[in-house]
Image 1 (tube, rainbow, N blue to C red):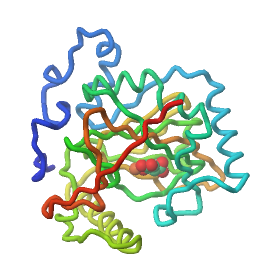
Image 2: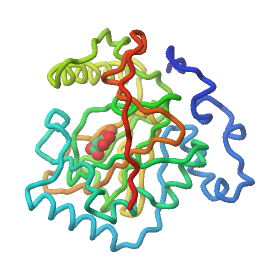
Image 3: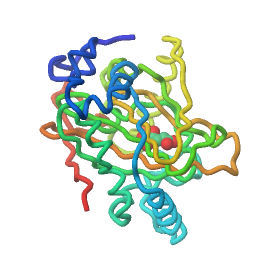
Length: 288
Ligand SMILES: O=C(O)CCC(=O)C(=O)O
Ligand SMILES: [Fe+2]
């Protein structure tokens, strides 16, 4: 794998992304870092971690009922059609109406853990609810949400029910966070002028990822976590929704994205640093 990123200043990256020694990244004398030592080591080595949460059980039933109602009312806010790979809705920004989603996005263990990893305050800013697998091909969320300094992005995938292996669980490529970040320049692409071109660029990117995975012989792993656990992936870790084996099964889950304080945020699909173009993004912190 390639550790070099042509367009970045290595010393500005989160320390865990560049330092091989855990002792240079963490201080296990600190009681919070000690408490999470197993998961902190895992995310440093593999680019992801699974965290047990301490939320009351009712929160999951409440969120699932409220999301069902939203879909039943027929008016949920969805990701654009071109980011749907099947009929299953991707409900976005439901935190605005469902307080319990804010509770999860601001879960104290998640926020504490992320601060240990990144040494900056995490800012939850986007949510997606899933009823079933998206069947989305492998990708890095850094193709959607980027930062300066680079790589200050994390995705947290909360299981809202126990995840069945046949429901199309999330799949990840362990250690793929160490790959270089793909840019429009690398793919010889122009900044898209409309959503059709955006989708074309993105499809080429998905094909590029397939080749990278094949070329490097990278193994994937399906994540079957339980309710009250979450999967945390770092900025560039490849992941996707695996194919559904049993269409009768649900796979209720919530993805929250986090950026970090004192960074700038940009949309990489519309940015080209070789042409000095950075599509700045404003984010709104998820709060009550
Ligand atoms: O849960 C899934 O099927 C895919 C989710 C995902 O990749 C995302 O929301 O970034
Ligand atoms: Fe994703």
